[in-house]
Length: 94
Image (cartoon, rainbow, N blue to C red):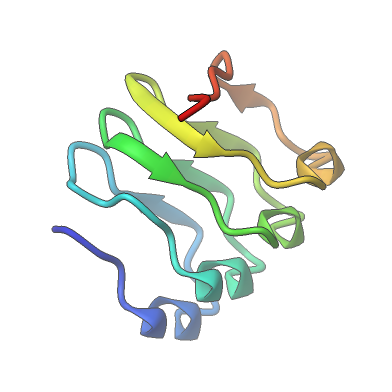
């Protein structure tokens, strides 16, 4: 899997999404429409860029991205108040 289709945002009742071990480099903005998403796993995706509106996933409790270099963290990341599980964040400067 190399990219997530924009239609993922239509899965309104989705609670868990595991995209670990894929070749995805950027999540589509439509993923931020998954308001019921509780778990998002992106482990070992090599390099990844989060969408700017990630903070709209207000119910998100678990965000895993172990072994994944993050290109850019969204500015309002601190608004994810229900987040309980988060890997140490290492942002790639390139």
